[in-house]
Amino acid sequence: MVMVESLISWVLRIGVFSGATITLIGFFTTPEITWLGVLVLILTPFMRVVMTGIYFLSRRDWAYFSLAIYVIMMLVIGSLLHMF
Amino acid sequence: MGIYPVALAIFIFGIFAGSLGAMLGLGGGVLMIIFLLLALNIPAHQAVALSLIAVIASSSMGGSVYIKDRMTNLKLAMVLETFTVTGAVAGAFLALSLPVSAIQVLLGCVLFYTSITMFRERKEEGEGAECSGSSPLHGEFYDEQSCATVKYSIKNLKLGAAASLIAGAVSGIVGIGGGVIKVPIMNIVMKIPIKAAAATSNFMVGVTAAASAVVYFQNGLVDLQLAAPTMLGIMIGAYIGTRLLARSRSVVLRRVLAVVLAFFGFVLLLKTGGVLVW
Image (cartoon, rainbow over all chains, first blue to last red; front, top):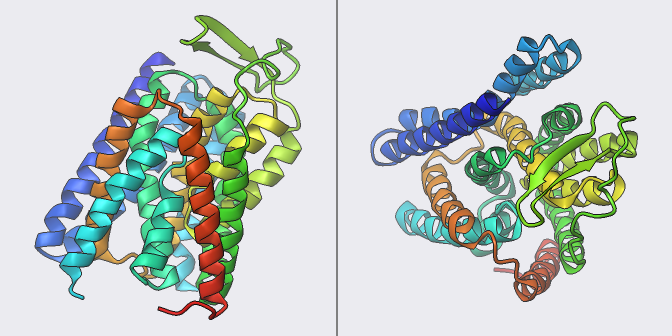
């Protein structure tokens, strides 16, 4: 558990810093790079869910694992809504 | 006005909002959205999208601290998250077809609500800390201040779930993280100690904001040029706030900010109603 937690906090840090760095580079160059940076930032909290899901999977805690899957599914649905 | 002065203004205000948000547990979204709407006259949908970006940045910064303190109840976060995320995606989708006035009026109401919750004193652990293993979602954490392990069980899960759904939808529409709605509900209704509630809420706020943000992002509503100063300003602010100022819990500052939020809520309603124009 402790390992998962410190891993999660590292993922958050890496996600937010790389998102900001890419976005900053994009600010002075092209919008396409900024787009990527924003995407990295938006996906960072979901990495937290993915890792929590993996943690529950490793403990064979199926109920909570399926909740994590549901949350990730909602993100996918949210990202597809603009097509309708 | 060109893009650079606006970007600079957002960057500077972001530092302010980020540090104040981290100090007071506000998340920074509430302050950011007011600034974008009222000071910079950014159209409501774009302002909400940028504010969500700010919320994601500040919660990810704050989250790396909270998780280390081991106060986040991951199981509870997962259960409530299913409801907030559903609300967040639905809310953001709904907001796309809502008129600007509806979004601003809802935000005005949220500001009044936030102001009221800030006036209330935050109760420290005690009433929520009772040991009964009946709920599978009970939790515990080590409290540095009292040097003891605090155990708690969770009450009224159904009510908490319903409130999470609404909090998710509201945050998707007005571009806040929804911590101001979730923390009091977890603390007062679900009887979770305030520290565990705040840490668990932080986990959820980032995911909630991201679920809404992705809807705005895919609809091209995230202003890419303004995203960079928003992110950086909030990150620097959140860093300052969590490192240096997190322990100073000033009641006076809370009350001043509560009045300020209510004032801007009022101004926002007047502007939406066409009484004030600029």
